[in-house]
Image 1 (tube, rainbow, N blue to C red):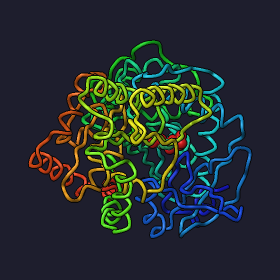
Image 2 (cartoon, protein in one colour):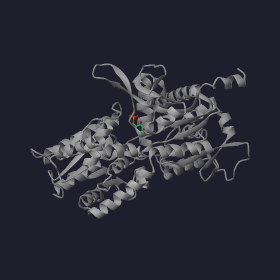
Image 3 (cartoon, rainbow, N blue to C red):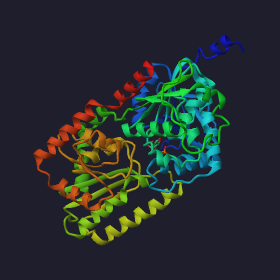
Image 4 (spheres, protein in one colour):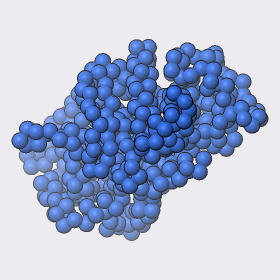
Length: 503
Ligand code: G6P
């Protein structure tokens, strides 16, 4: 096919394409037993849906079921292109390499990452499938935005297929320090995969720096401020497909000056901290029905003086056990009393096919049972533990009901729950206890910042939160709200896409 004919092939495609492991919709079953689709409630979909509908965009992603191929379909003005995964690919690519290797490795090895070659093979194969699906639907010169750690090879694979498109990548989770990243047997391929993007976004400055250092130390590329100079000969010498081995042992010699013009391509690695749909949360927090529901929740809990709230996916990165240990010790020491104080822990089910998640669930549920067995009274519970997903309306009612929000993650790319709590507290009350190991801690400096490994510090912050004088509480919350109101997820998407457009 001539070049013009080849280009012509893409004239009818989409100008804007999002590629993410998950499609922008979830399958739902209605009470009459029929199934349908519902837009995913997450911030990413909320931020990108308006851009998708106004700019003729398409979303490429997995629809969440194994061994099922679906034709493209439209939902609420979004064009959706499902990618099929076999049952074995769900096991090897999703549960295995994404959530058994990369997730723990990128979260400070809180759990032990497992390195299996057959998982890596599946990861490469599935990334290639996503790249091909995106390459098929993107118009000539389109913008393609690839999301998250499940798809780190897609940028370079897509560039090999479609050098005409502009490629952005955003990593929603932390990028590990180079010393930890170095454990990954396929570290070179992952870096080269990411460097296929024109713009690589990270949550924190330190994530962007970790990536730059890994690239400088391992690949030896020249880097000036946020610009990485990718030698073109590396791209043509070894296309990523079929690229498995580590090409060099140890540390690559570092390039000390910019390579000659025409011999490199630039890729920018930069922080773009994600946020939430602030307006939506504020709107819900003003809704009389939700305000009434918050009062009802307090009453159902026996109108305690202080409610501590934790809201997390049931994940070992979230520090749920640390927070329970601190709470248990405070009850034992009589510094908190059941009846006067209550903890509510929402733990939404997550990755239940992965062994480390199954173990965590057992441990948490054992701990809750032990604490409640020891401290509950007939009328009051120490910890109200709920292993469910709730709609955003119920979440906002909980935010309004809670006096103290506990975010004790041991490592977290951002933590949007912290930002949602702040957005919901429009009357300026409420205290946020926030782990310094979350991306959110870089922006929410007026929270009570803690190191969750330091149980005494965590306990002290929980006690401080209950005794904070109203002026101090309001001053902190006002400053936190200013940050969250002026930096919403729409602005995040605009900032990223504007920068990508400029490059
Ligand atoms: C994190 C990741 C997302 C992921 C989400 C839920 O926020 O950054 O990419 O979609 O967790 O996890 P799941 O495995 O259910 O998609």
